[in-house]
Image 1: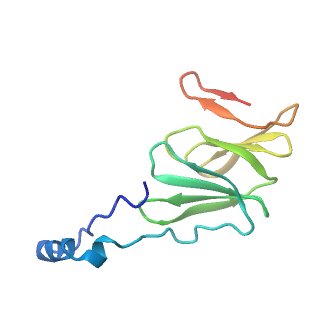
Image 2: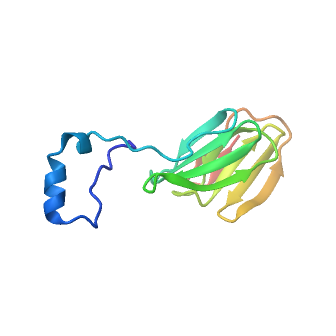
Image 3: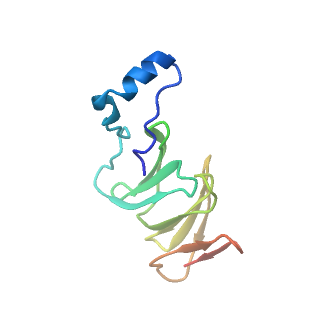
Length: 138
């Protein structure tokens, strides 16, 4: 639930917080994530398991964007070599991500960028990660 974090800024004084808590227009405000769009269309949207980041993949040009929910802003954007069919986060945050791509590759990304690309023998349709024994099933 992205809109549940309607807390008051820490720099507000206590009296101002009390006055804003009774202000109906302030309580019903809507906060949007900046630049939450892709050029053509988005293929996959996934939220990390810590509910702090949203990872979105786009179709043309193939790209991935990561948004931080607490800041309501984009964290990073990367270009990819081909379209993404499925994505899985391998950690609780955006630190390790696996992309199943349409050119029969699984691309592993770390915070610094692309780490490794693995070519698979057949086209994959979906991918799931089992964190208990660290298996990535295609």
